[in-house]
Image (cartoon, rainbow, N blue to C red):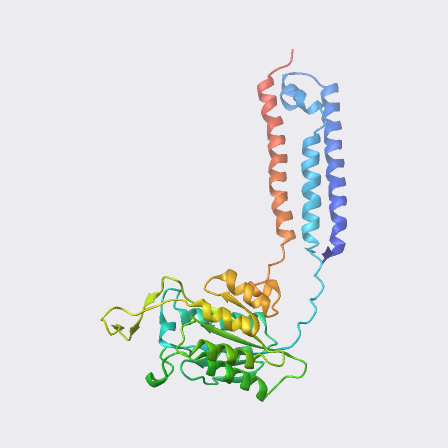
Length: 339
């Protein structure tokens, strides 16, 4: 515990001592008046209750004085030791922008949640170098490797399910993984860990064996591959513009979370899979990538304002002291003249 104005701490014991002394002098003076004078008027001024020392009032005033003096000194908790710097991280974030990512079974949409994931990643790992790669049937480098989180957040806001042309719609994990690995190799950071993060609902049109071969190839040389799933098992009907999509039989096309492929990609790449549709999954993903626990939660706990609570403590103490004093005043009216 440290104090911004430690010299004010001396006021607490001094004020408590002076208040105690004042109460003692008042008690003794009233006692002498009661001994030397008698009569109906004096009996009303000096009730029997004042012949006892006002211990309760003294405690309330002394503790309130100590609390106010300590609050005036502005206490501050000891600052925790700074955490050890996290190892440098180069990460390629591949975000699925295919039509199914526009489904609204995750608030606000799957792609809207994907933007949140990217922004939280930049907050939790501000020193990481990030490559932002939107992909559907074909990947594109939207942001080359940069350590400026503001740039990544700016371009992440532009991600939408109609970002790619109709002929590129679909989802190809194999090409996205190969592109992400090539982006990491283009500008490697000295001594940095390297990782690939795939943010998708898991639906793909390329062959499973082809995807796993691409994941194994992309993870060579110590690159870990992580997968973040978005969507629900129930799924959501898809639409193009204002027109619902239908299959050949005229039934609505429903996009569901297919986490099996994402889990296999993460397993083949030595990383982990997390469902980031809720905060718990997102925090676990960020911590797995190396973010401190408080950064993964999105905000640090604010220090307790001890001065405020000490001042607040003094209010009921002063009210209690006033109540005790008023109680003695009421007692003298109830007692009436002494025989």
